[in-house]
Length: 184
Image (cartoon, rainbow, N blue to C red):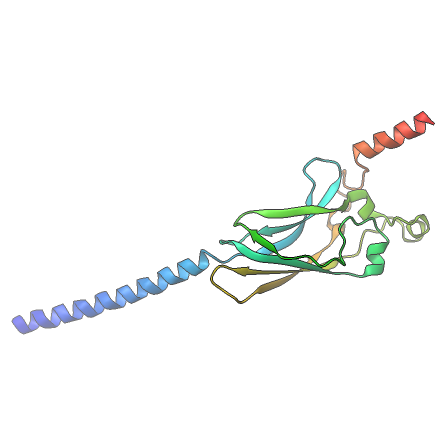
């Protein structure tokens, strides 16, 4: 009987050791999953309602994104046809941090300027042709890892074509034009 109890106790110890190992691995996976940032590039409407279009980098992952940088791959000739506010040729230092669930936004352009070329001759030739799609390459790293992550996104302003108010000039610009016309 004592031999049976010893075997049963040994078997229970092995089961407990296997369960402990399994729990250790699961906790390790949960810790890793809890610190995986994912940074996404996308367009946002400017919150003040003036028709501004922001380019945003949002951390939709589960941990902080460190050393975040972005690069735009675009046809420079096409970009020059529109009134883009963001200097795409400029090299920038990486942003130190984008916290989980947070974003960094900056003015890309004014909506109506992104749908029609700024040169009147080009506008007549091309009509109301929006800015061509372009690539944004986002790079970031995560806590405890020296391996940088990189993802390429395609941004296309034409996704807003036909939506009410998107191609309108902002109210402040309409007022300024009206005042200038009436004042002269």
